[in-house]
Image (tube, rainbow, N blue to C red; front, top):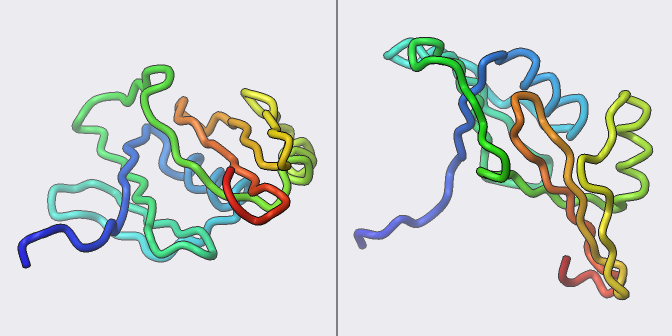
Length: 133
């Protein structure tokens, strides 16, 4: 069948590869699964969240010029057990939410955090029933 069967990875190009990789590992707890240089010279690092199959590809390719992320262009969303606990975690790292948690009556909610280079990260908490965000 000639259809796309599965999303494998999403690429974000950055100016500072190591700063971005460290953010995803230290702040979000992602695991680096592999690192290599592409045939055209891009430096690539692949990261994975513990319960996800899809990878995030962080790319450094200076020949394309500097990265300038427009506000509200794109974001990655991650599930967390508790927005409150995650807020304490990032506070210990000297960070804060860019948009404070918004909670619904069922306990579900979301908040935003700025990653290096201006990319946004959405953190989502399921409701008490275990459904929805």
